[in-house]
Length: 522
Image 1 (cartoon, rainbow, N blue to C red):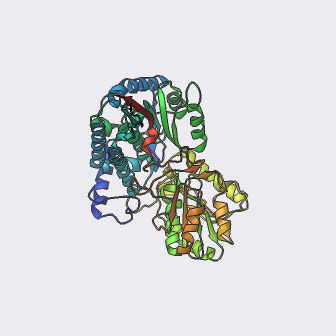
Image 2 (image 1 turned 90 degrees about the vertical axis):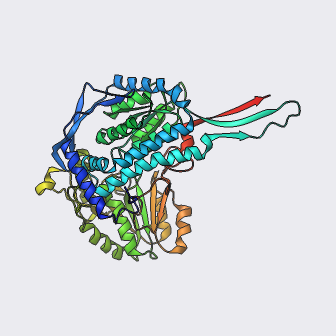
Image 3 (image 1 turned 135 degrees about the horizontal axis):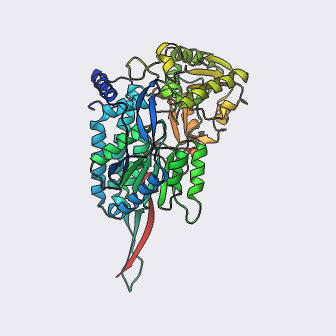
């Protein structure tokens, strides 16, 4: 892609992008309905059971049949990864990095075809789908460059101060072994590809379990890794139910570590499982957010409204960084809400593969049903719905999981102020002071992203006090969303993350390795 698409630049793409995407959608539709295999030990492998995946924009359209891996399939993938590990960890760091760059180039070459699949499978609009695909390519190239820049984390230490012997010291980071990656449904390519790239370049082998709701993306990633020429067994791909396949991978004795992206509840269970005897194992868990934004009287309200709408309703609020809570100073609340309603009610909803539609469906039937349940909770809980609150059932929209973006003012005791929704529902509360807003924002047990719109004299106050791993100030591209590899690190505090280190940061890759101190005396 000649145009560098990121979440920050996606709002003004060149015409060529649209034409190429539309051609890719037609190619994707011609291939729908096939049966997909697993990928174990360098070979495609048929599964004994399959499940049907349909288009969330049109539940009558079958995208394909995807393998429901068994516990035995999981065990075979773990054994394949374990068998490949001695050779892979012994592969020169520069060679591993170059193989990752090949994967990156293949993803970029296939960016339109992969993005078309994401739009059909997840329900993302074309720009979100293209951006996720490019983001995945950037993860592979970024981590390859970071690993080489670090000198493969092999560093000399001062010699011991001995007069009788020469005693040389080094610190060396070494890979753990077989690394399990469990990907989420909402970013099934980028949040599978990012941790996979990190684990591979540092010398681990990988077993990836894609999200049950969105398995096609993981299969397309597996194709790119296979075609890049990685040795058999170094990377393996499974799809299936988390309760069966994911549990089998995490509990397997060959699992040396894991990266999980998903809910706080499941992430905590995985963390606990990996700390159980006989030995503790590392777990990098990204566990969602209940993200908030503060707007003060010093804010540019047009900029604030644009960023808030994009972060609250982009991809149907199904990003872990999506904006869910808005605390606005009472002096500007009415003016901001008027702008929010105008922008929200002008959102074009429909088939996400079509250029004119900004918002597609929510991805699953469960999310669609949850939307109705949450709206009912708002209506029954003394909330005031300012806009939205409808499932869209007329015409073509009735064939998919389409809902209207919703803004509500509700009492602070309402359950939806604390529950992670993963839906296009924005809760609004008026505050009388900035300190009140900060206290409410930090009240959450989660701390992934936080946004702020205000005067320049308030910025340091916000950054010093916000309890979140990712912060955005006065950003029209998104109040709480839009991190990009190499530009923003992405990781959560409190219940949103397990390590305090962020995706794409200087400190990310060492988490996939363990330190060995080496002293050699001549």
